[in-house]
Image (cartoon, rainbow over all chains, first blue to last red; front, side, top):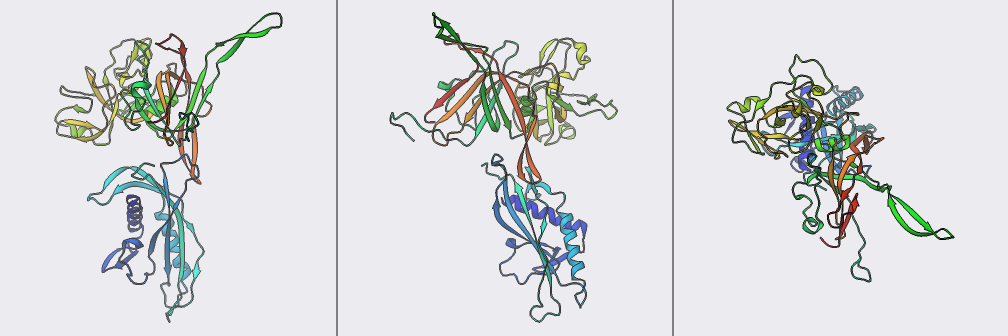
Length: 169
Length: 319
């Protein structure tokens, strides 16, 4: 299962770096594409950063046809927010739209090969993995926080990721 | 649960696994599953020459054998019965795709699409292929010696067809498993590569060494004399074709409750099928696509009593 999670992340990260090289974030002093797996970061690693995709893994998802037993599913939530690029924050909607577009772009094609990233170079594990297209949740236009000059607009996209686990069912 | 007799048990099983072996077409000899000797085999390691084809879904057996009645006496009462027109079919969905599964579901010649000469004329199963590479002495079913430039010619992950050149013979061709029947060399254009186009002697390269190719799995038919290698880029089956493959089959219901049931068909041939593939929904719009196979059972004469039999069902109370 970890290989599938790693492969999903590395695929989206590479696609984001290719599509928008300027979409970066500094985490723990390191600049990298602005996509982060929450469970891979240090606990309590501060507030989330704007204009960054945060991946969180959710519950197991059943396959519709019970005869497809070898495939396993897992929910994936990708949250992101923006405060806009101008002081007044009036471009927040446009910024969310840009993030939406980038997310949809990097999730397509909705498949990749599964790799073992615990080795370098990574090793092809011989199976593919695939996911549903992201379902974009409602935009939450939050109230002003902590005296910040701008409110923030945030969205959570959901998708189900499917893969062949290393251990046969 | 054990019944009052102490020998009965409810059967619980959640999956069926399929194993096939090729009927020797030249001698018309099927592969026999001996329940006394082989019944408790580990399902991941079937006894030779059975080959595992993975889990199957929608496994369904049906019998069409007719039972006739003999009537006698003034009132025409049934005095006896007899069986006629022996008929049995079995169908299933192969959840995994591979050469064997495709070949079984298709039922006719199953073609290896050989890597092609870029200038070749387009053909539906591949045109003139690139020249074959000879297999050298010292090769085995798991390692092919090809010379000092092995790594330049082939790479890990490549699929290979390994068989002899076509020598204009007639009859069944293909090492290990008959892949086609040739009535006249002119039918196949006297193509020196034809045997490799239909052979089941295929394998994937696991890794290359300085002079040889190590295979992911041993070649089913070993390395025949005069064998050569061609790269396979795809597998193709066809609606049509005059050839019928013939297989021995074994279906096993896994023993969730402790008891195992095996269905042994000594001789199976592909039957007419309306559906060729079946979609199994994962999450809209994604589906897993299974190969749907329908087979007709041919009779085998039981060696113990001379009875013609289409299928055997064996129950093992505990495995």
